[in-house]
Length: 157
Image 1: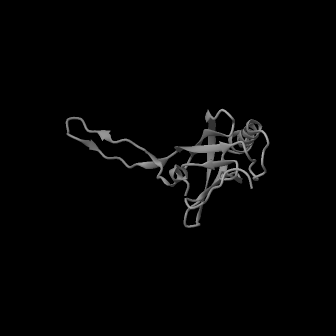
Image 2: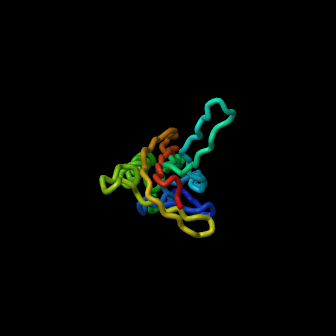
Image 3: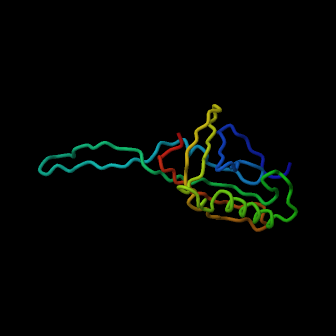
């Protein structure tokens, strides 16, 4: 099989059924999705008194940036590509069409399934807000990219 080799010791991830670790791309910072949600809420200033009155905090929407390594040597099924740049373009196009482009359905979220290292799964709807491609090596062998997930509940639970 051509393309990336990867393991799932740190877990695995699918977005709307698309494997995010496969022969053509790999999430490099999956553990970001293990982190707690951001919180909303502010304390109240008490005039004439030192300190503040503490207020309850609640989980809120949280944005996590996933770093991807994308290769041009193979498609997502592991079939070798003869032209690295064409393979890279095809892989980026696939991610754009099947993971990043807005769904246009219901609330626009996609189903994110996080498989933890112990084998348990956590599922949560999330918006895939954008994809940016950073460095592309000269021969098209690989590119670094990021995908932003906006998780309405704050975390994948």
